[in-house]
Length: 220
Image (cartoon, rainbow, N blue to C red):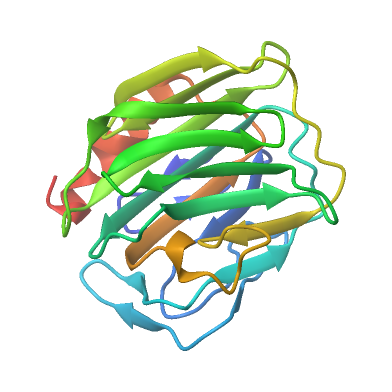
Protein backbone atom coordinates (compact mmCIF):
# COMPACT_ATOMS: atom_id res chain seq x y z
CA UNK A 1 0.00 0.00 0.00
CA UNK A 2 1.01 3.61 -0.17
CA UNK A 3 1.84 5.92 2.69
CA UNK A 4 0.14 9.04 3.98
CA UNK A 5 2.41 12.08 4.23
CA UNK A 6 0.39 14.13 6.77
CA UNK A 7 -0.07 16.83 4.12
CA UNK A 8 -3.32 15.81 2.41
CA UNK A 9 -1.31 13.61 0.08
CA UNK A 10 -1.30 9.85 -0.35
CA UNK A 11 1.91 8.53 -1.88
CA UNK A 12 0.82 5.58 -4.07
CA UNK A 13 2.85 2.43 -4.37
CA UNK A 14 2.60 -0.44 -6.83
CA UNK A 15 -0.75 -1.67 -5.47
CA UNK A 16 -2.62 1.60 -5.98
CA UNK A 17 -5.19 1.38 -8.80
CA UNK A 18 -6.62 4.88 -8.41
CA UNK A 19 -6.20 7.81 -6.05
CA UNK A 20 -8.33 10.96 -6.16
CA UNK A 21 -7.22 13.87 -3.98
CA UNK A 22 -10.05 16.14 -5.22
CA UNK A 23 -7.78 19.15 -4.98
CA UNK A 24 -10.00 21.18 -7.33
CA UNK A 25 -9.82 18.55 -10.07
CA UNK A 26 -10.88 14.98 -10.95
CA UNK A 27 -7.42 13.67 -11.76
CA UNK A 28 -6.11 10.26 -10.77
CA UNK A 29 -2.85 10.73 -8.85
CA UNK A 30 -1.88 7.04 -8.92
CA UNK A 31 -0.14 7.33 -12.27
CA UNK A 32 -2.67 5.00 -13.94
CA UNK A 33 -4.57 7.85 -15.66
CA UNK A 34 -8.04 6.84 -14.48
CA UNK A 35 -9.21 10.44 -14.47
CA UNK A 36 -12.89 10.90 -13.64
CA UNK A 37 -15.65 12.40 -15.77
CA UNK A 38 -18.54 14.26 -14.15
CA UNK A 39 -22.13 13.98 -15.36
CA UNK A 40 -23.25 17.31 -13.94
CA UNK A 41 -21.91 20.52 -12.48
CA UNK A 42 -19.79 19.89 -9.40
CA UNK A 43 -18.00 22.12 -6.93
CA UNK A 44 -15.19 21.89 -4.43
CA UNK A 45 -14.69 22.81 -0.81
CA UNK A 46 -11.61 23.73 1.18
CA UNK A 47 -10.49 22.82 4.69
CA UNK A 48 -10.21 20.01 3.87
CA UNK A 49 -10.08 20.16 0.10
CA UNK A 50 -12.85 17.87 -1.13
CA UNK A 51 -15.41 17.44 -3.88
CA UNK A 52 -19.00 18.53 -3.26
CA UNK A 53 -21.66 16.42 -4.96
CA UNK A 54 -25.28 17.45 -5.39
CA UNK A 55 -27.89 15.39 -7.18
CA UNK A 56 -27.91 14.56 -10.06
CA UNK A 57 -24.10 14.60 -10.29
CA UNK A 58 -22.12 11.38 -10.49
CA UNK A 59 -18.57 10.46 -11.50
CA UNK A 60 -17.24 7.62 -13.62
CA UNK A 61 -14.18 6.26 -15.40
CA UNK A 62 -13.31 3.31 -17.62
CA UNK A 63 -10.98 1.25 -15.44
CA UNK A 64 -9.09 -1.55 -17.17
CA UNK A 65 -9.08 -3.74 -14.07
CA UNK A 66 -11.69 -6.41 -13.41
CA UNK A 67 -11.47 -6.34 -9.59
CA UNK A 68 -11.15 -10.14 -9.70
CA UNK A 69 -8.45 -10.01 -7.02
CA UNK A 70 -7.94 -8.65 -3.49
CA UNK A 71 -8.88 -4.99 -3.16
CA UNK A 72 -9.41 -2.12 -0.74
CA UNK A 73 -11.54 0.99 -1.02
CA UNK A 74 -10.72 3.75 1.46
CA UNK A 75 -12.21 7.23 1.50
CA UNK A 76 -13.52 10.06 3.65
CA UNK A 77 -17.17 11.00 3.19
CA UNK A 78 -19.61 13.48 4.71
CA UNK A 79 -23.26 12.92 3.78
CA UNK A 80 -25.37 16.07 3.98
CA UNK A 81 -28.67 14.69 2.61
CA UNK A 82 -30.04 11.15 2.64
CA UNK A 83 -31.37 9.66 -0.58
CA UNK A 84 -34.25 7.18 -0.75
CA UNK A 85 -32.22 4.03 -1.38
CA UNK A 86 -28.45 4.18 -1.36
CA UNK A 87 -25.60 6.69 -1.39
CA UNK A 88 -23.34 4.64 -3.64
CA UNK A 89 -19.61 5.12 -3.01
CA UNK A 90 -18.58 2.58 -5.63
CA UNK A 91 -20.28 0.47 -8.29
CA UNK A 92 -18.06 -1.88 -10.31
CA UNK A 93 -20.25 -3.43 -12.95
CA UNK A 94 -20.43 -5.63 -16.00
CA UNK A 95 -21.84 -4.33 -19.26
CA UNK A 96 -25.20 -5.78 -20.41
CA UNK A 97 -25.85 -7.69 -17.20
CA UNK A 98 -27.29 -7.09 -13.76
CA UNK A 99 -24.04 -7.99 -11.99
CA UNK A 100 -22.80 -5.14 -9.84
CA UNK A 101 -20.41 -4.88 -6.93
CA UNK A 102 -21.76 -2.08 -4.74
CA UNK A 103 -20.36 -0.29 -1.69
CA UNK A 104 -22.29 2.53 -0.09
CA UNK A 105 -24.44 3.97 2.68
CA UNK A 106 -28.13 3.17 3.10
CA UNK A 107 -30.93 5.60 3.87
CA UNK A 108 -30.57 4.84 7.60
CA UNK A 109 -26.88 5.79 7.47
CA UNK A 110 -25.52 2.23 7.73
CA UNK A 111 -22.85 0.87 5.41
CA UNK A 112 -23.73 -1.86 2.94
CA UNK A 113 -21.84 -4.33 0.73
CA UNK A 114 -23.82 -5.89 -2.11
CA UNK A 115 -23.01 -8.03 -5.11
CA UNK A 116 -26.22 -7.64 -7.01
CA UNK A 117 -26.91 -10.58 -9.32
CA UNK A 118 -25.76 -13.27 -6.90
CA UNK A 119 -27.93 -12.27 -3.91
CA UNK A 120 -25.05 -11.54 -1.58
CA UNK A 121 -25.84 -8.55 0.59
CA UNK A 122 -24.82 -7.42 4.07
CA UNK A 123 -25.85 -4.28 5.93
CA UNK A 124 -23.68 -3.05 8.76
CA UNK A 125 -24.76 -2.21 12.29
CA UNK A 126 -23.20 1.22 12.99
CA UNK A 127 -25.27 4.17 11.76
CA UNK A 128 -23.59 7.35 10.55
CA UNK A 129 -24.87 10.87 11.12
CA UNK A 130 -25.42 13.68 8.65
CA UNK A 131 -22.91 16.52 8.26
CA UNK A 132 -20.08 14.60 9.90
CA UNK A 133 -16.92 13.26 8.29
CA UNK A 134 -16.25 9.51 8.40
CA UNK A 135 -13.42 7.34 7.19
CA UNK A 136 -14.95 4.37 5.35
CA UNK A 137 -12.85 1.37 4.37
CA UNK A 138 -13.92 -1.79 2.54
CA UNK A 139 -11.58 -4.75 2.03
CA UNK A 140 -12.00 -7.96 0.04
CA UNK A 141 -9.97 -11.19 -0.07
CA UNK A 142 -10.61 -12.82 -3.42
CA UNK A 143 -9.30 -16.28 -2.49
CA UNK A 144 -11.46 -16.66 0.64
CA UNK A 145 -14.37 -14.40 -0.50
CA UNK A 146 -14.09 -12.64 2.87
CA UNK A 147 -15.08 -8.99 3.02
CA UNK A 148 -14.81 -6.46 5.82
CA UNK A 149 -15.91 -2.89 6.41
CA UNK A 150 -14.48 -0.36 8.84
CA UNK A 151 -15.94 2.93 10.01
CA UNK A 152 -13.36 5.24 11.60
CA UNK A 153 -11.14 2.19 12.01
CA UNK A 154 -13.82 0.21 13.90
CA UNK A 155 -14.58 -3.07 12.10
CA UNK A 156 -18.32 -3.22 11.55
CA UNK A 157 -18.65 -6.44 9.56
CA UNK A 158 -16.64 -9.56 8.77
CA UNK A 159 -18.46 -11.90 6.40
CA UNK A 160 -18.02 -14.18 3.38
CA UNK A 161 -19.73 -14.14 0.01
CA UNK A 162 -21.80 -17.24 -0.77
CA UNK A 163 -19.88 -17.65 -4.00
CA UNK A 164 -17.28 -15.72 -5.95
CA UNK A 165 -18.39 -12.75 -8.01
CA UNK A 166 -17.18 -12.40 -11.60
CA UNK A 167 -16.84 -9.08 -13.37
CA UNK A 168 -15.43 -9.37 -16.86
CA UNK A 169 -15.63 -5.78 -18.03
CA UNK A 170 -14.19 -2.57 -16.82
CA UNK A 171 -16.70 0.14 -16.01
CA UNK A 172 -16.19 1.82 -12.63
CA UNK A 173 -18.89 4.20 -11.46
CA UNK A 174 -18.30 6.31 -8.40
CA UNK A 175 -21.38 7.69 -6.69
CA UNK A 176 -23.94 6.27 -9.10
CA UNK A 177 -25.70 2.92 -9.29
CA UNK A 178 -24.32 1.29 -12.38
CA UNK A 179 -27.30 1.00 -14.73
CA UNK A 180 -29.40 3.67 -13.04
CA UNK A 181 -27.37 6.79 -13.64
CA UNK A 182 -30.52 8.81 -14.29
CA UNK A 183 -31.98 7.82 -10.92
CA UNK A 184 -31.12 10.27 -8.14
CA UNK A 185 -32.10 7.71 -5.47
CA UNK A 186 -28.58 6.26 -5.60
CA UNK A 187 -26.42 9.38 -5.48
CA UNK A 188 -24.11 10.73 -2.84
CA UNK A 189 -25.13 14.21 -1.71
CA UNK A 190 -22.26 15.62 0.32
CA UNK A 191 -18.46 15.76 0.37
CA UNK A 192 -15.89 13.13 -0.55
CA UNK A 193 -12.12 13.30 -0.14
CA UNK A 194 -8.98 11.14 -0.42
CA UNK A 195 -10.54 8.32 -2.45
CA UNK A 196 -8.14 5.37 -2.75
CA UNK A 197 -8.54 1.99 -4.49
CA UNK A 198 -5.77 -0.60 -4.10
CA UNK A 199 -5.31 -4.13 -5.47
CA UNK A 200 -4.47 -5.34 -1.99
CA UNK A 201 -6.42 -6.26 1.13
CA UNK A 202 -5.36 -3.80 3.81
CA UNK A 203 -4.79 -5.27 7.24
CA UNK A 204 -6.50 -3.90 10.33
CA UNK A 205 -3.18 -2.34 11.38
CA UNK A 206 -2.74 -0.61 8.02
CA UNK A 207 -6.27 0.80 8.26
CA UNK A 208 -5.58 2.02 11.79
CA UNK A 209 -2.31 3.62 10.74
CA UNK A 210 -3.98 5.45 7.88
CA UNK A 211 -6.91 6.62 10.01
CA UNK A 212 -4.70 7.86 12.85
CA UNK A 213 -2.53 9.75 10.36
CA UNK A 214 -5.43 11.50 8.67
CA UNK A 215 -8.30 11.93 11.13
CA UNK A 216 -7.21 15.33 12.43
CA UNK A 217 -7.85 16.78 8.96
CA UNK A 218 -11.53 15.90 9.41
CA UNK A 219 -12.03 16.94 13.04
CA UNK A 220 -12.07 13.32 14.25
